Length: 416
Image 1 (cartoon, one colour):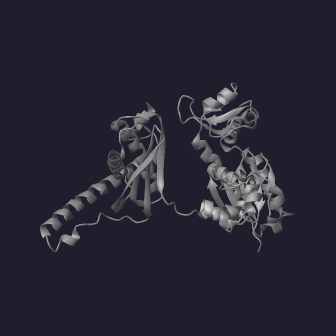
Image 2 (tube, helix red, strand yellow):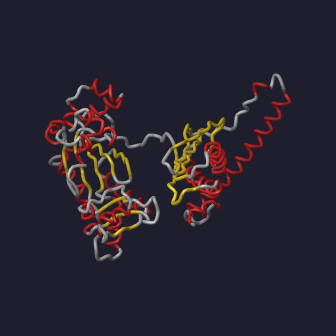
Image 3 (cartoon, rainbow, N blue to C red):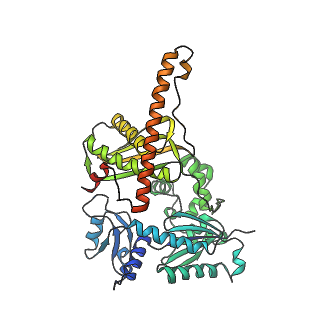
């Protein structure tokens, strides 16, 4: 059976969802019709444009640029701070609509998903009619618009949905590639970033068509294995399935770009507490344990360094993550002012491993040493069990009364 894949993408999701909520609450102006953005606080370095309206785009405002720069381009620009709780609500409603039309829906971000519609097109006049029905229901029931890309694989469906916006439906089947995709600049190809584009251009490869007609061996000599991937994509080759169940994450992490450079260990420790708590809580929510903990630093010169440790036990307690993160930080930091801090956990498993007796091999030679270390190990495991119970109690309180119902002391630093 021939595959039929849709890629559905919300148009300027954050701004659309903010606009929809405002209109529900009686707003007289739809912020999608005026120069507007979703962005952070202009006084903070992490204040960047997350989403923009079509009128804002006409002023040259780009996603990812500082809000302060956007205001220079358009002084009358309206800026609204992000509301991620609101976005989660609309994202869930968006996905629920999609699940009414396809047996397999793969959500790849808060505002986009793939639908495997293979075989279902027999119930409609054509593939475009089915997409139009989905598009109409989302617009009329949820209040925002989406683009739908249609093809025989995920890559081409994604490329199609990125054609003209908003509220459009586009097809990009293999026989349409030479006309619709090959004339595009190579930068438009999925998975091709700015650095790769610059290198391709230096090799005389300007369009996706140029890339598709290049020798894959030549591309591999310049880009290694990524050269083959780009060549396949340029020729519309992609066999990846639509997955209704996401793969297990390879890691859990969180990082924070700081409003001002951190120069004291005490300040960094409070941020590490916040990061450790958020990461550990996600691990506990998914019933996952980690054996590797890593700390990342980006300093004021934008240099990145990291340091990790592999434990002989697995954990998801906030206390463990915080204590170990602080130790890793002290071993890593050279005193240079810090712009970003991150905590990440890898080597994941769904079972808890108690601390191993790494000196058990010495028991034959020194029974006293072995018994002493066994006692220390048991004490540490007992302390971890206490911390697990504390975490469980805090998680229940937050789940019932909200995240702000109870917080560790380090979190208050972030509000100052």
